[in-house]
Image (cartoon, rainbow, N blue to C red; front, top):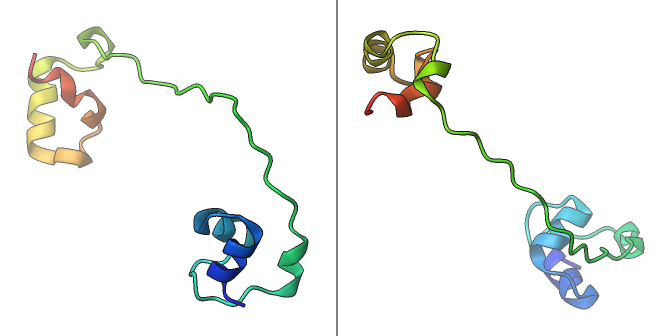
Length: 89
């Protein structure tokens, strides 16, 4: 039986079935040992999303001119790339 059929019979979505079985394609055959996989509990807890605090020029280790030159010349390879939002201010 392929993964898609197994997921439909057991009431899982295809993405849940892939995660449960470790298979990556809907047409892969599901081993018999996967019939004993326990149900996924519904967790309704909200996960806190961490956001980066806004950067300030005081946080930058170099001056604005050096920051601008480094980012313009090196792009993503610049060690100051994370401070690129400060250049336009």
